[in-house]
Length: 446
Image (cartoon, rainbow, N blue to C red):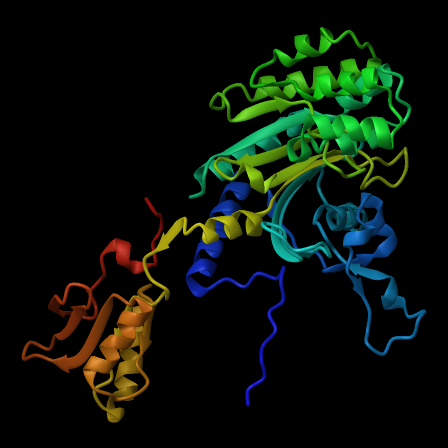
């Protein structure tokens, strides 16, 4: 009796046509990243625990690496699987900085692992696509604006719903909260960042109960979090709140500069949203989150920000960076579940070479090789069965054409479009399929 296979939740495995969509999107993303001068790297899957723990609020999500028979003090027990690509990238830069040219621009598309409870859009293993820039000593604010610009260019060209990018600067929040007399702004960051998830009333209650904040101060924290504009009017709205602080002023200036640099993008595609904080301790300035239209309940599908100290060795050797990450698996899981995509066929094969007799297998293989040399994906049916069975095989896989080896008096062979039933004589050296049939086509269902 066959053993029952236990399905593991949180580890997505796409069907062939879904994987085609994923690969096509990865290809398109990589092409645009390279247009902006980003080069591809790949880092190891594991990092020392002390480096991974620099991120903040991550110890519960971490998968440890340990051999089954390892001793308690074995060295590999102090390793963990990376749960994002920014921390490994920062380590990579430190390790190879003498061989890199700064500002160093890289893109990285790899799987990451998080030990959180699997739920809608959240996985324990998934793909992330990151771009980051790291500078030596300083990193111009120009790159803080380039990140959302690239995100817009990438996401608007992918066959997915529109993404609205929300931008904030943590200096605004820190300066504002300090101006209210709050000594530990990070605790407030984490709670205000939950506004979209749990609403104002619950956030205010948490501020008052968890942080022992008085009602007036809690309400003033929410006043800042309500501000959302698609232009520079957020600056005046913050000033009208009457809180003064040097860090606050610097944050407003920086965010205004970023928003001004993005003013040529379509109105509404970029929003200044002053409650966005990102729950990671290493962010020091600009932060980003992107929401997918029609799927806002999924939460952020892309995010990132500036980090001035993550890759730095000390005060004298600073390597500030800024980057964004696209949660591709998160996006695709929701779209696959809603049957958003339509793929023209389940196989890359364009032509099935039919086999009339076992003795002609070598001829069939050579014909398929000729098609492949011309960029036409082909496979040979492995058995000399009735043509009807071979054609049914092609139909099930969505292969559009079947090639028959028999030649007519002019030396031509027949190619059949099994969708329409049309059969034509073809010259192997010249025949090409219609452009739309050469490769599987990905479309959005109407």
